[in-house]
Amino acid sequence: MTAGLVSKTLAPTRKSLRDAGLATDEVKGVVMVGGSTRMPCIRQAVADFFKQTPADQPRPDKVVALAPPCRPTCWPATAPATTGCCSM
Image (tube, rainbow, N blue to C red; front, side, top):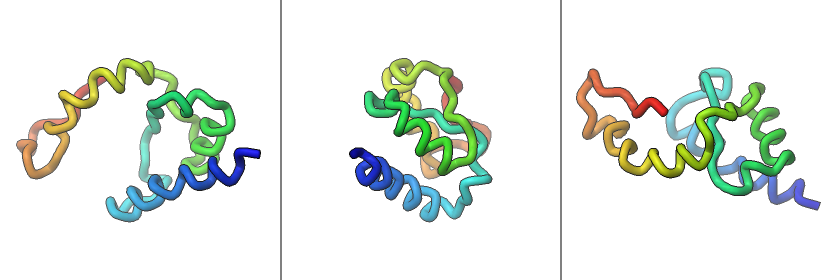
């Protein structure tokens, strides 16, 4: 019943990887955030796509709360060479 919708959710992921010039095997970890990511079918689709189990830590709610203030430091145009993304 949801297979078509689940498949559509991976389209932005494919585009993001393509835009970044990355292959799925170059992704070293997957952290999922948002309500639908708690659905087993979504978690399984992501695990199948990346060929790895999505991380269950940090907690998705914590990522949502902490990521917006950290995100600007992750952008290459604004981050010094020695600055990495926030550690959560």
